[in-house]
Length: 220
Image (cartoon, rainbow, N blue to C red; front, side, top):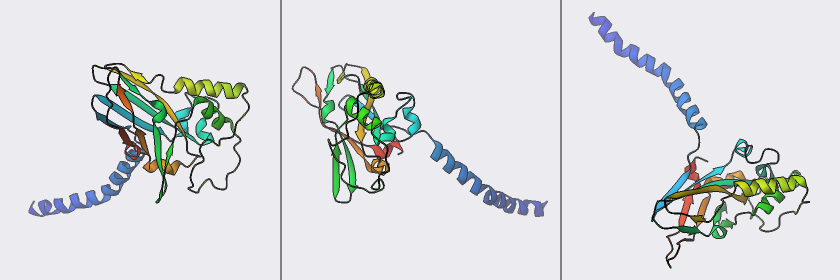
C-alpha cells in the first residue's frame, strides 16, 4: 500500500504532462474562435462602444450582393448609450478614424457618405501592386462609378445600415455603421483609434470631454 501511495504523485504528474498540450491547444483555439468584444469608453453619462468589421461574413446581411469590404472599406459598428436625463448630440461629421501608417505618420480618415460607400463597392477590383504596402491613404480621390441599379442598391443599403441620427435622447441607445476607406489595408486596424471630438448637451452650452476608443481592444 505504501508503494501505491508513492506511485500516485508520479502518475498524476505524467497525466498532467500528457494532457497539458491538448488543454493549451484547446484554449488557444477557443480564444481564436471567440467572438469579438466591442471596445468601449464611458464618461459623463455617455457610453460608446465600437467594433470594426474585419470579417467579410459580417457584411452579408446589410450588403447581400456587393460588399464595400471587398472594395477596401471597413465598417465600424458604433453604439451610443445616453444614460443621462438630457438629450445629447454627436457631431458625426467630425468623427475620425486615426490610423498609424508608419512610425512617423498618423492619418485621420473621415467617415464616408453612403454615395462614397457605393462608389467603393462598385469600383473595379483590379490587382493593386501596392496592396501590401503602407502609404498615406488618398482622401477624396475615389473613382466615381456609374449610378446604375447596383450602385443605387448599395447606396441605399449603406444609408439604411448607417447611424440613423445624431441625437441621442435621454436613457436611450442609437447604433449603426460608420464607413472608412482604408484601401484594403486591414493591418492598419490593429492599432486604430476612433476619435469622437464633439458631443454636446442639447439646450446647454456644454460639451463632453472627447472620446478616443482604442479599437485594438475589440479583439482585432
